[in-house]
Image (cartoon, rainbow over all chains, first blue to last red):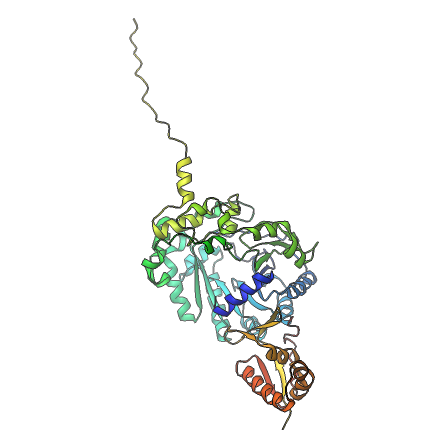
Length: 369
Length: 105
């Protein structure tokens, strides 16, 4: 985040303004990624008129950065009508897409409408690996073709590379592909549980060895010793800090109008079909509760060596059952980075039930007296 | 002196944060914040109102400044904003395209 953006974020936080919102336009998708946290049915998406009304409300609330995501945004027939309306309201619009449906006309239209950036999911530089994750043959070729079309329009393109066991070895290839295409790349080693709480997708994520490998790649992290160093104990300022921007300057709206603190934080706070966006943002009890939490309130984490440097996600913690608790996936990352187990990991180890030693049964004597 | 007309660049994003205008460049995603005078110019830049009228009706009302000097300063500022592709400056009225940002709140 640039210095000026940081300054604006701090100002927005002080004023209670939702500076950034992710709006998922649909959960429908033309790919079936193995790690996806969504179902792909339409349970009653907001109509075009409802979304335009919401955009009006969000502009009035001060939302500046609007990320349109899904599902796959281009499966909505009214996508460009929504995008045009959003730009008419002067939002800084970012798109997240698999780009499979972007052809030259769409790329030109995106450029003409002044979209800030387009983030495209690319899982590998090898078509067979990418397509095995999306479960759509030919998807790699079409996504990469779209990147070229968008770049030819002068647009900023970001390749988003979610890292799993299945594609762990391919991230250098994705970075090289990004460089060749003139696109930025981001790497995300977190596979989240599904929004309904089903954690089956998490097992697809990178294991401890994989995380260690990633965290010791100087191309990614810079100075490895510095990155993997154990942070000094948290000071008073760090303990008074808020865990992240969720609910403070950012939130998420689902295709059905449900408002959550973040896309990774499925705590219901209200629905824009029944309430005004600004009323949910300002007055929802759930949003207020999220907003009240400081690092010092995190029972287990404040006892942890890593509290000052951990990437703890409050949403993942919530999905584990306690928004003030630890997020085990982030504990594992801190452990992989530094070699020191987190307080949460140590507590779990202590509370693990003692193993019952199985004794050999006495040999029964067949002899009888 | 010929008249100057200002219009907002349709490729930028803009929002007022507690009276301070944030502008995201459409060219390279650079974030700008506008001072009070620049914010007045931005808000009045409809492509149809000449700069001297903006200065007379908006800037001179807001600030205690001599109109000729205010106009010179406003023109310098407008050209600076144009160099960052935040505003468009022309000696002819500027007709906004259909997709222009119309409502930077």
